[in-house]
Amino acid sequence: MSRGFGEIGVIKQLPESIIAIAGLITQLGDMWFVVLWIIGTYWIVSRDSSITNTPLQDCSYLFALALGTSALTMSLKHVFMLPRPPGATTAMLPAWLPASSKPVYESLVTSGGFGFPSGHALKSTAVYGGAALLFTKRDGQNYLVPAAIVTIVALSRVVLGVHYVVDILTGILLGLLFLVGMNRLTKADPRPAFVVSTLLGLIAVVLSQSYTSVLVVVAGGLGLGSWEYSHK
Image 1 (tube, one colour):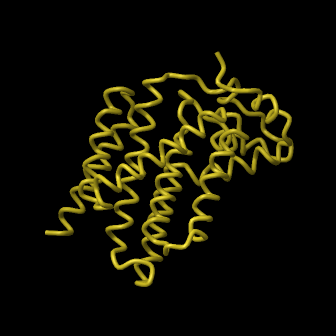
Image 2 (cartoon, rainbow, N blue to C red):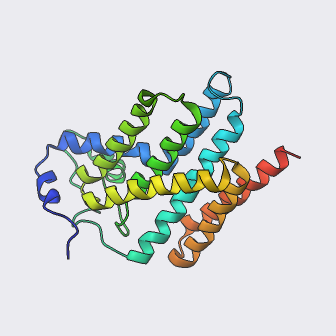
């Protein structure tokens, strides 16, 4: 039984240009972009003590959040094993793009594997939300940008036809719960955060048996080892 309520039929009527734009926006929630964003954020905040006095600690914690949400997503997808919307793995190349760009375009606008919950929504909520908690002052307006990023990333997944609305809403909720839980459990300390993320990665290895889950475990272990080494 479909999890949708007709949204996929609506998005199939959208112009190709909108789909292409959504393909670019959705990269904000992709792991490669999130990691580069964390590196860039460290470069910025390490040069401005008014933002934070502990740039390495804060950005290491954000990296642990990214790893943990990736592991959690893989595990949940293989527990529920719910399919993506029909056509999620295929895309028609717009006529205004050269044929040589087809592989890149398809990588931007399609997704494979199971569809519930949305990993992009989950990860974006936890990481960008975590950054808001770490780096912004206690002013509600400072949370508008992270909230906007999470919103457009989540909506882009629906526009691309790779998720149902319920997938992204669940992803956002789980991202919030994960962030709150990690903050309470680890107090934003990278050491226990990396431990949690690595353990979640091990669970994902068992459930998904994917190389991506192995990479999460390796990255978590390296993150923990690097943090310990730098604080001898």
